[in-house]
Image (tube, rainbow, N blue to C red; front, side, top):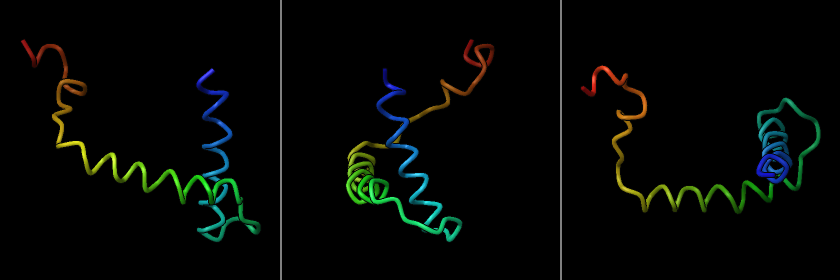
Amino acid sequence: MAEAIMYPIAKARAEELTYQMGMRAEPNFAGKLVRLIGEPICFALGAMVGEQNWQGLWGSTEAQD
């Protein structure tokens, strides 16, 4: 269900990014909308969250013992 919701959004954004990079002839207006609304929201959320320690996710279990 999450894929059915997110796939069209991600595809539209990717198509707009390829237009911005000059690799696509036509803009994607849904992708432009996603970028204009979604990117500032993601930036604001990222600015509110403090620095995280992700070593537990990427380190081996042997190193934690």
